[in-house]
Image 1 (cartoon, protein in one colour):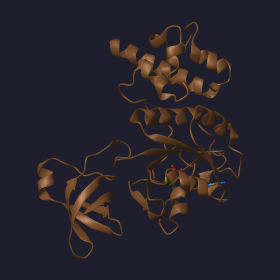
Image 2 (cartoon, protein in one colour):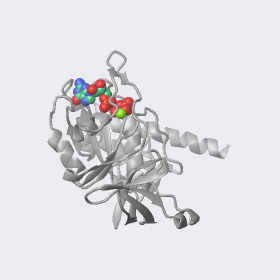
Image 3 (cartoon, rainbow, N blue to C red):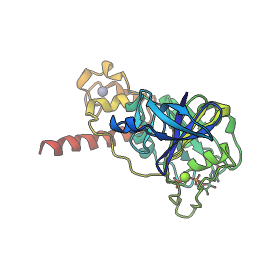
Length: 292
Ligand SMILES: Nc1nc2c(ncn2[C@@H]2O[C@H](COP(=O)(O)OP(=O)(O)OP(=O)(O)O)[C@@H](O)[C@H]2O)c(=O)[nH]1
Ligand SMILES: [Mg+2]
Ligand SMILES: [Zn+2]
């Protein structure tokens, strides 16, 4: 029978079957083949009695996220807050670059719209081509749109601490024990409350979702080249063909650069272009230090 690993605990693999969850050990042979099953893997199991089973095979993986270690993700839900903590555009853009490199879809969720309209965020990411969902998890605003964006996907929640990632899970599955931290309104950041990795199955949406601990720093992926960076910005992708220097244009100060022109016309937002230049300079520095 086929299923999906939703959590690892004390040497057991918990596997979601269509209608129930079972607890499995891996077949000895798998360990010999050096296959290590991961949360998110689609697997074949022999079902035994009493909710137990044996893992016999890992089906081919589409991708494997490093942090958190989860396989076969299809979407990243970037959660930010309209206020408290203030949206961190640089961090959102770093997450988006990583998402584009992995070829995953992205949704920007602006939570806490009971405190502020969230337009500062939506006016940047909607024109860039990303779906933006403005919600208030505590005041129950626009929750249906959020659920619609999860349908059929395996989504990982990402974003700063205190923005409401765990609150998404809590809202979806109220019966679950989820650590929802107290946000410190004065300082504008929350406590780091989320730890272990678990894929949460939502049968009504045919969706899986994984919570992650908040973070405020994210390194650019190893091996990301200067010229690939612009392709990780959705609204800059493909513009290089229209730049005078074509394929070698970095969209910094080169003459007749289409990207700079689009920024001037307001088609590419200042915020996104600023993030781009910051990340680009980071890559230039990185390459320089490698040649030293
Ligand atoms: N005003 C307001 N507060 C909210 C909303 N949603 C969540 N919160 C509060 O924000 C705080 C942080 O929520 P969490 O869900 O723990 O945030 P998190 O992103 O999981 O934080 P980490 O686990 O630290 O990364 C909690 O006190 C929530 O009650 C909302 O829509 N409006
Ligand atoms: Mg949390
Ligand atoms: Zn250019």
